Amino acid sequence: VEKGMIPAANDEAIIHQEFRRMKRPLVQNAFDGDLPVGDNANVIMVTSDMPGAGKSFCSLNLAESISMERDIGAILVDADVVKAGISHALGLDGQLGLMDYILDPGIALEDIMFRTDMGGIIVIPSGRRHSQSTELLASRRMQDLVYKLSTDFSNNAVVFDTPPLLLTSEAPVLAKVVGQIVLIVEARVSSQESVIRALGLLDRSKPINAVYNKSRRAASIDYAGGPGNYRYWNHNDETSG
Image (tube, rainbow, N blue to C red; front, side, top):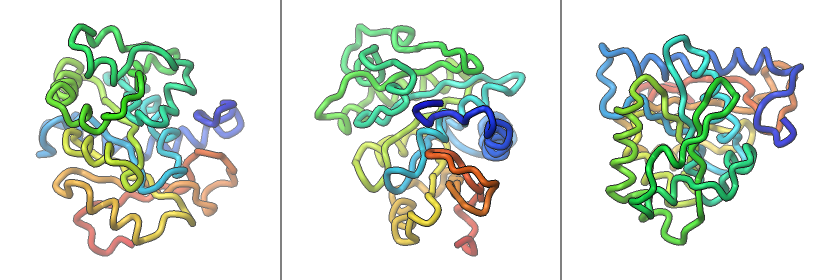
């Protein structure tokens, strides 16, 4: 709460309700076998066009909301390997994590998984920083990890918190291996141009939801990373602004 990553008690009910709305199409795409979503449908990438949109807040609270489902768990991966906001907020700085796993074949997946008391969410921290993080995230071992998480933990949604699309080169690489994408758009800050540029870096054949975050038209919550008014955008909807 102090780090602005989960809502305070007086905001909790309305924030949780917003994330219930946010998760429903994602859960349906991931676990409804009748929908032709594609590979790794239960692997969900949360990103933004630019920094400050609240994507890490949304990643953490989305994972917690999904973990409330009766038959579905949640794994949260801190793939923002430069900032590592989730790892820091949860006190996992210095722990083995994603980068360590990719670099060292001797590290087992279980070595980088940490269970929390937030609905039993399992967190994979970012691990050590590395100057070749983009190349590591584009590696075969990273692809194998995503596949392993998707299949060995098929009753879980795997939420990747990733860097902003227009700021670094890591996020477009990760977008190629996930099954679904959530783009956080910051109210009054994200421009139409930046959103269009961000969408241009994504595979538009994958399900893409856009979340309009920090809207003043929502309930009167002044929350640093919190969601405001959610609006879902379908990549086939040419009328959406």
